[in-house]
Amino acid sequence: MILNTEISSTTSTFSETDKFDGTNWSSWQRLIHIAAVAKGAFGYLDGSITCPSTPPATIPSSAEISWDSNTPSLNEWKVHNAWTLGLLIFNTRNPAGLGININSTAAEAWTSYINTYEKASNMTQLNIEQTLQNMTYSDRTDFNNFIINMHNKWSDARALRSKINNEDFKDIIITSLPKS
Image (cartoon, rainbow, N blue to C red; front, side):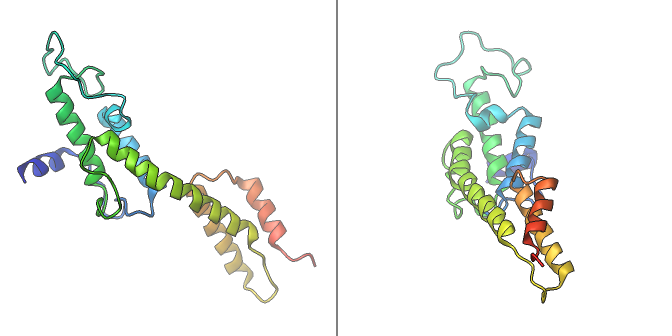
């Protein structure tokens, strides 16, 4: 379709490894946030810039309306919303297969992502933190590999915005060691 080609040529697209696949919510949503803010489209993403129900009394020229204007014309809103929706769709592998509402506004699609994946990320973070805190070293285990595994779990938890800091991690390591 011509519309998709035009939108995708102007929409920020991420590398294949950075596109959302259902498992990388935390890092992907930060990239989306940065791209939307940089373009001035965050209001279309969070729904704070809504579709005008009636045309404004005076129609400003397109040069006068910025992306983050709270009063775009109906046509400007449609174009900006489509760009923002494209930002989400073109940076997601199989959005429909991931259960994302792509037949609506950008704000409704974003809410669909949040409702599905923010909660899952929070659960994943809690599971990783619990796994990290339950790890125990035994004398028959390679110590270097044990520490590497702990560090990897800690990195995974921090990527999901865990509050485990350096001191907490040191305490977790100490409590994971045998008493003797």
